[in-house]
Image 1 (spheres, one colour):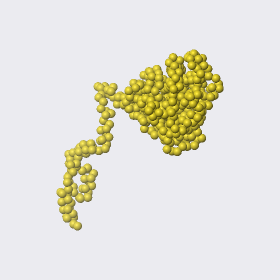
Image 2 (cartoon, rainbow, N blue to C red):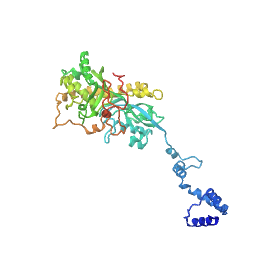
Image 3 (cartoon, rainbow, N blue to C red):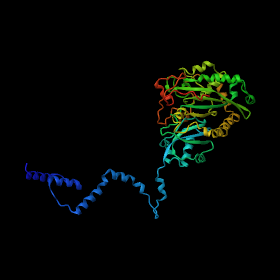
Image 4 (tube, helix red, strand yellow):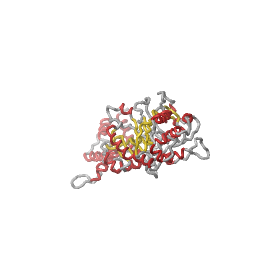
Length: 471
């Protein structure tokens, strides 16, 4: 093909092609000149125009979009001296990290730990204090999941806690005294520790220990008057009998009769109890009290209170040892629920977490604040329990109802349950607000694993539950 014909073809092609509103860059034009040997004269004015067009069209580039997103950084008005206005500080982001917060509370005047609209709860007062202390935002207060808030254990209405742990994102510098200033006297924060980014106070907790404080006269059915009950002192053989009854609960069993709305085939009703015993006996206000300690992987709504109620009923002669075996079977049994006054979340255990991160993070045993914890218990928890028994006869009134209690289920008169308690009760696994799935295995007392379908009832962990620290 001749050169003249080729040029004619290129000329016609350029006439028919649509013209782009944006002029070509200098470099591509130079390349077309060398190829087609066309030498149009470009003036300096044209080059300036082309350069201006290129700058203006940077609005279409990703660089320009990124630049526009950062405009807020310099949008704050400046004073005459060149300093930004004070409101500029509000735009700065505060670095937050996952923290574990240890607190204690007397739950007598509260409707449980978990937030429950329309009633007073521990979480509501705690989050309000954190907001007022400016450790969380207003958005975090109204929706605590924004701060990845999670409690280690839910507690029922009227139940107290000596060592409750919650995890959430907080600034690196947190003043515990500042938080306590915003809290009522019945709630106290003992300490804050930095934890791993994926730490979850519920799923990383491998065991929980509850205490139940009650007057010792409940184990002696022959006492009738108030004076006899005050003068009663439990003998050693009676303590051994109580321990023998409590040992029945040890191991992995189906506790469907010890909670609400569960049936015998429900895998989530299987719970592993590591120990249940009498810890100590003490005298206060001329009345003798006993402290029962139960340690388990997790607990369901009303479970511990029903365990205590059934043990008292058996010891007082309302049933024999066969009743204790019957309640773990398929048959439905109506178990009496002991008062919530004496129940206290005593400790949450993070043994495996501490062992895994002992070289990089502080231990969650909280030994450094043990004195503060004991002082809070003596000032705000035990006095309320003792007062409820000595002045209000809490357990004595319950014993009168126990004498008329029927263990046979009745279709006409189902057991009355407060719906608000079902929402904010002390089921450690059935947490509708938490998005984390507990996917561990339930561990039997002989350290063998149950089928994977029982995963929802266990605390998340891959290893066998350690029995160290049992009391």
